[in-house]
Image (cartoon, rainbow, N blue to C red; front, top):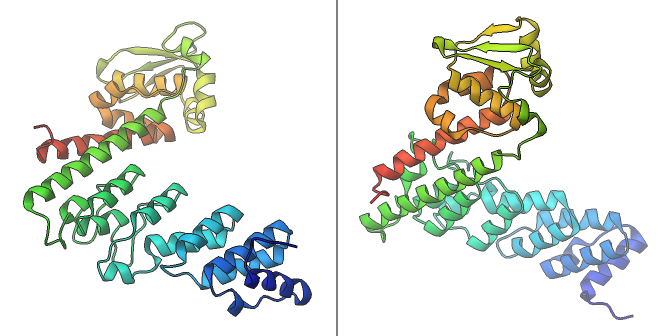
Length: 322
């Protein structure tokens, strides 16, 4: 019988089937271990899969992490996947302490598998912060494209922008500024995409937004901002907090927030959409209502909008408008 796997992989499989044990020394090479994993999956040898997974975790190194990561992904081995991710993005601090950059292809692979780019190392630095210190623009932009927090506060009350190029003696001041502008642009692009994802297609209930038809509730907005019709059943269905609040109030409720903020909350609850103009006009009021009534999606939109505003301010400050 002809097989693709190496002799060491076949011996490991046969040894397991005859003895129930795996000779780890015989699978010292990543290619042999991958072959044993392939054979175990092919012949439904769950015990061999588990043993090979443990062996893979034990033999992780800079030379083996890429092939083992591929094998872990192919055979859906969670422990080995987690170990490879940890090795790549922070568990091995030697490279960080030595200032050696991580390979972009490895980082890109694990970010694609859902690894968290905001993971911190033992020094309290995020992955973005470490790449920023090294002035590694390519890696910084990669982290940002996968949701890295550009404004995350690190030791010394610094952000990735403050740290950019700190350990690089080759970057000129102009290049450092250009790197910071590029990072802000990447972060803004990511935030724009996030805000877009928060918008959902309008639902059938959108037809009842601000309508008096079948209305059994009126919001009297703060500052004499007007009165808005609503429907208790729709609001209660969208938020348990809102339902409990409505039970404690009558059909005519007074709120402190502005009409703009209340309109934004109702629009979100009726349509699932976020009114960007309302966030710009009264972010604090919208956030207060989202927090009070447990509207997680609207609360997240407020946070994203606030970060977006900070990034835009940094963009102008760094000269990105020129």
